[in-house]
Length: 187
Image 1 (cartoon, one colour):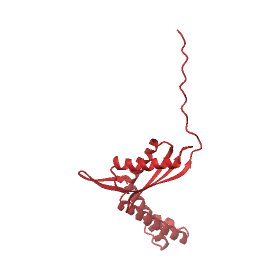
Image 2: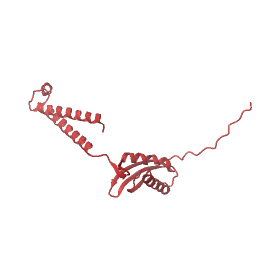
Image 3: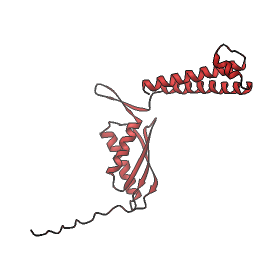
Image 4: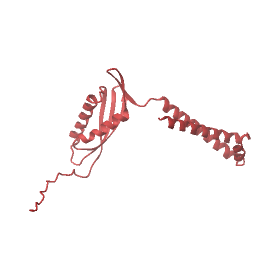
C-alpha cells in the first residue's frame, strides 16, 4: 500500500472515530464542542446509535488496515545466487495467464496461485476453443506451466497444477483464407 493511501486511511479513521465519539458524547450531554451542541438537538437515541456505529466502523477500519500492514503480500520465496528472491503470487498469475497464447486450443486461462506444504498450488480456470481436445489441451497446459515456472521463474517447489474447464467457445477458430492474387493492370 502506498504512503499516500496509508495516510488517507489513517486520517479517515481518525475523523470517523472522533465524530463517533462526539455523537456518543452528545448522548451523555457532553457539550464542550459546538458541533456536539448542534447534534444534541436531534433525538437522543438516534445520536447514540449513530455515534456507536461510527465508532465501530472506525475500529473495524483500523483493525483491517493494521492487518493489511502487518501481513506480508502473498509471495513465493527462494534462494538464488547472492540472496533471497520473492515473487508475488499476482506476478505468477499474470505470467501463467500470458502463457495461454502459446497453447493451441486454449482460448483463455485464469490462474489462481496459493501455497501449501507441498509447494506452489495453481488452479487454472480455462476456456477452450471449439473443437479442442480436452485431454490433449489440458495435458499441454499442465506441461507448459510446470516447465516454464521451473525454467524461467526458477520455482522448483511446484505442488499441484489443476485445470478446470469452465467453458468451451461456440465459435470455430478462424480458418486462414488463401491469399487472393491481385489483378495486375497493364500500363
